[in-house]
Image 1 (cartoon, rainbow, N blue to C red):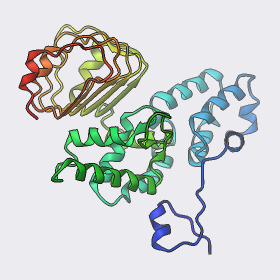
Image 2: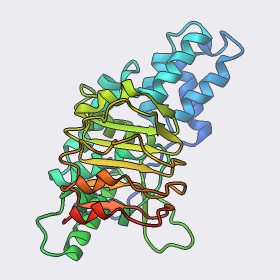
Image 3: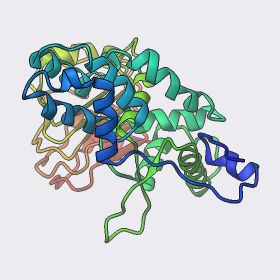
Image 4: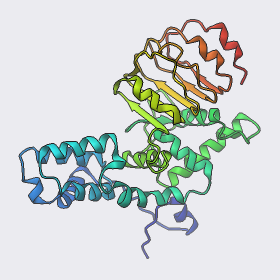
Length: 328
């Protein structure tokens, strides 16, 4: 008897004698499947189309359901410009791509809906704060989640860490997280998320795409303008990574719902004036790996709800006296 299942837990419960993990397709097989769904007429319609098809197929990272859904949507395109627009949409707003919500996310969401409790579900959504192909340590994810209060019910920090590891293990057994590669000089385990699964997590975190600013992730986009910052009033969690900076603002922004603010691996030297003034419920602030950051904004001392502050690998030489107000 041969059975297929989404969760490795089922294999254990059924005492399976041999299990075979169905990995994503190789590049050659993925591209072949994508071509069959796009159709030869579309592939041969213009000299640029094969190269564009390769770009789209690579975005699917070998996931058959994504290749089929996106291939069918691309089959209806007629001009190279129309195809390029769809590629940009796929990269920047995947949930808006034709067929993604109804045919793909709705099916993949079954694995999320089947998770046993809210702690595991919230951890899955939290992992969408990191960009595509990003590999993160178990330790970092658990620290951030402790800071957010997800593990507050445990009596001591070690119990919380142990439970954090169990949560990550549950997501790996459900095939929603994958093993990452640890740097040679680290003993800590690393994890990563398949690009399409990450798109699903971000869509779910934004209430099935209805509140697209609830979770905001910007990776290497250059400058973020004041108008976009104004749209972050409903945002709960923000992640700004790698060469993503905010232009100077006329007025300090207001973030009434902000719980997590991650701004890491950037070349930022300072933040806009009074940027951190209005964050009444923030719990996690990570400014690590900003090598050019030499001074900490004094208003951070007013963030009395803060539970986690990471300033590692910055050039900050002294801390403002206002930080004495932080008690947690």
